[in-house]
Image (cartoon, rainbow, N blue to C red; front, side):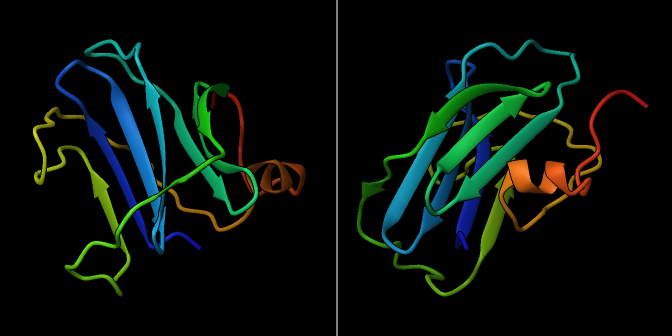
Length: 121
């Protein structure tokens, strides 16, 4: 299981997602978000496939080779999820997240088992 997840906008407008597990970090990004538009964003992580980012059901980026870096010194044993601005760096942005769901399981398996709904309602 991941110990930290962050989703934020960089100054250049990229949407970035980072997942951490112990001293390993996976990073994905998407260069094409438009302002004032809704997107269906999915992040999928598993220890073998790494972090994947899906936008409107399409895979837009993946990181299956994590980098190793020192563990953060603050709250290393706590699990965190950050949505929006990453206040520890020079990143900014705002977004509205609606119907946020967290599922623990491989995305393809959850879809097979009908745990994840797809399509327009």
